[in-house]
Length: 633
Image (cartoon, rainbow, N blue to C red):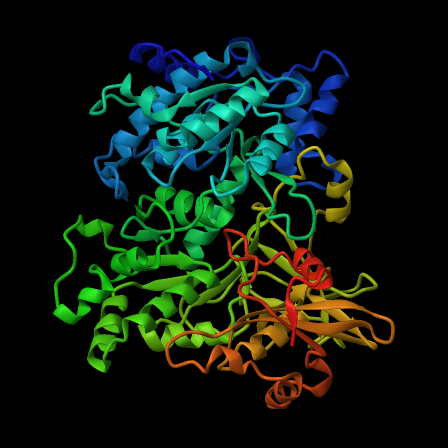
């Protein structure tokens, strides 16, 4: 592995000083524009035309073409908010390995990483026609992940998080597709990192070793104050899509996108320095990286970070004591008072596992009341990244007293729609646009049916209750796919609306996602059927623990509604062998669905193939069914 030597701490200060002083091309590496190839540089980074992008994007292109964009300089990103607290002893991260870590300490360790990383890259640190250096990061859920993120941003590099749960081939795909210049990793991932760095001949920096060269208690902090107007359109993070509808695509998220997301989410959910977020999400996705980490840290809140999702540990975090000890009436576990959570975010699959864990504990009524009372100390619990089934929504409310706040977002747009923090939250709905976000529903012949913002939403005459494609526009929407100009062109309208690919409807004054147009809308004998609607109703059956509904080719109907179900084995559930027949299921569904929506085929699976965020790859699932992997029932 090509590992880097470390500079002395004073050299790191010079980097921060340079960031404070740099204002022109002559004092820092930059995009060059002496040849026409620079125009290709911008398109290589964002892969979209400035004619339909935001004014900020056009300014980015103009700045680059006029003489270059400085690599080291003040960032218009959440980092400028974090720098304001760089000397703060306030708690930023609480994790099981390092305990309580302050903003000041994380910042000083990020400082150490900047000098190690910039030295390690050498000439590769310069911006080329392919844009700024992209740095892969393979790190556990801990404060060191945050230090690596801040180090990349402070140098103007692009932070690209990797997931250790992904197979090696997938991580290789991300490093290759992004042309990553280096890999930051923590000690637990050293073996995997060594394999990756050797394959791609890129340097690796072991975070644990790099920060040892810097005094962990250092009180001197950078004196520069980042501007809020520069670098808004400079890439900060490169995410990759889940790949549920095709190969994963790179999504460059700019500092301006992140800043807009912080403001929007912070306003909608009233995140403040008084909050603590209980974090158990993977750190390679917008949900875990932006919503549950960047937003709270940018607003001065703290994060109680678990190494991974574990139902027992999450319940301990929520209750302040292991659930099994509720019976002993013990007080909350000793930890910093500001590490007691006030906000919790998770995906529906996690909530389902938490419900199952609680059922397995077989709590008495008084113990259930204790659980609900302790959970009431949190002010909001949020669900996202996948549709929230009604049974989970209701079971969680019965268990904790919290009605989950469901929201809608995508890697490409950040957060788009949200149920209200205060007010009614309708089952199956995702509320109204976030502050600063515009949303509309378009008909198949490109007519605007519904359009609005967080202030007001209007339905055009004759289109009430009509389904169409959801489109989103706003400062949190990404500029375009990484190195995929055709995909970018197909994903935006001429005036900058992003085509989400989701079918939505606006009714009862809220948006509702009907399904992914490509896989969740089943065309059955002239009907357009929402797979998500059928799934919600199937999950109400006591013998079904999980399910997915897909459309399979049929010569008579075009597509036939097919259900893949997982038997319910929770305590109190019916025997797993009593999965209903198709006829019984149709009878059950009559209470909530028209007969033509009932599944015509059903297959039994031990579990559904879900990714780290709880999403089912339905194209892969259809292949499994057609290949006979699941028993037909």
